[in-house]
Image (cartoon, rainbow, N blue to C red; front, side):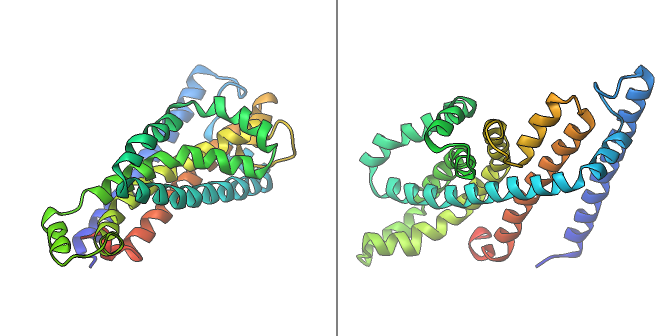
Length: 261
């Protein structure tokens, strides 16, 4: 239940965020004016806003393309990561054998993996999604595995006392306990999903007419359109916040019963 204090805290948070943003824009404008910086080096906020309006159609299409790849990659990572976590929770030997490879997948630089994936999968939307899945997978596998294994000992003893099978214990005890960890891992991956999609688009956009935000950034950087480049950067940040907020909204509505245990 949302209390009056919660509403006041939310309103205060919004006000403070907008205040900091306005101060940041003001400082940005003053710095460009004081040092007489050229537009190609650092445009003013007003110039970036005009570039946003000028390239609005391209930016909207870029947000849609990158957003679709981010959502698809995140959803696939949640599905694959949850299945892997369930397998790891049911077999210690399997966890010891395979979990290091999940960690290895996280430690390999994605900019080194993306060119290989393009060779194998081509300059396609599918490649962008695969890169996004790789970037998002580890937080989900790690979080859900931890949640499945961190069950209350007394509850576990009770299930054993009543001779509940492995499947019954997984469905009725472990999985509800892991929902909070799944939400936390998905929130972390939600921010990473946009990064992964844009990094993939840096490479995919070189060989096709793919129109994601990463492709737009690469093209505008080559043309020294710094104002449009910054506009695309803000759009990518907005997309990341939207994806994170959507996951949070789902967690406090559809999953509230398990998250607020």
